[in-house]
Length: 447
Picture 1 (cartoon, rainbow, N blue to C red):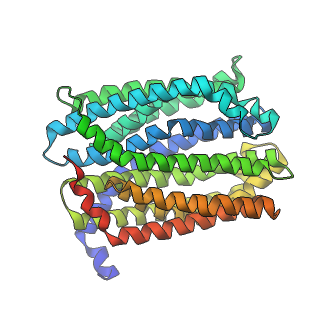
Picture 2: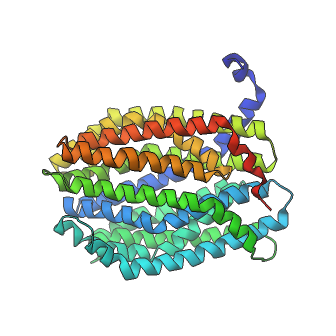
């Protein structure tokens, strides 16, 4: 079909409209995540470069503990978005109830693990001594949020799968309005100090989880736990969980690689912390479009509309890439101003700017791969996304970053370029798999 026919196709515009209606609230939610994260970094920076580096590592470790919750939310969205548009209403209510029970149990388990074993984990990791001593109190406090974060992620996934994305937006608005002022109040006006950042997270996420539970009570009838549906969710979730494990451990390994650099390693760790938060201004909207794509693909597969499913995934990806290009240009043109806002240390600012100029080159490519991958996950094909991402991470990004950056002494610039290469290859492989269309057959996995 020619470009002019595509533009005049009413179905294309209908899909684009539906995609945007779901994507913009999720993009606002991701903006809230960005604002909270950037506030965390700003507040940590006021306690010095060591505190900022410690917060960055603690935050990566936090994600290691909640990665099971992230993975489960992928499975929940894939299953519930299809059940919601099918005729299986009893199975839908059962899936909602079963999902909340499952993630609550997991949240409690990992919360206890964080409280009991976080110090042991930090002791065996090779980090600068001054950074290592600051991390354990942060992790112990963050562990109190695991249960609430598991519930919040899953209930938000349920709401967007059922056309309640604006309710999800309201919940996250309240979380943001609580978290940001509490960051400043608890960190600067109480004895908590740096740990006030983590306490603010616990309080705001707990409130959000309670509100989300209240909202989803209205969409279910009765109460029934289904082991069969739990198995379906887990069969979709485990590859995503493994992927999150590979990804988050990879992020931690990057910090460890930077720790091996002979000069300015703490400043470069702080710069990576800042760079990742700045980059999240782009990545979080991309993630919003990826989540929207998962719901759209899942809903259409529930209706068994294979052709529209394929087109919808592409249309949503193109929209996400267009927005990514604009955001990337804005950030790159203001790199010095943004980096200077997050740190008063000249070396940290300089390294942060280098990260922005190099790593953000691949953002549109990254956006295309991630959003298409979201569509694949919505279909239930999480295995392919996991394999492609894990292979490019551990066969390209990590080894090249170490070999070029540390072994050959090319420094952080080589590490950032290794990241770009892995992102590009990942996007190419996901695109190739998407266009094979084998993933569309996964519509039949539901009971």
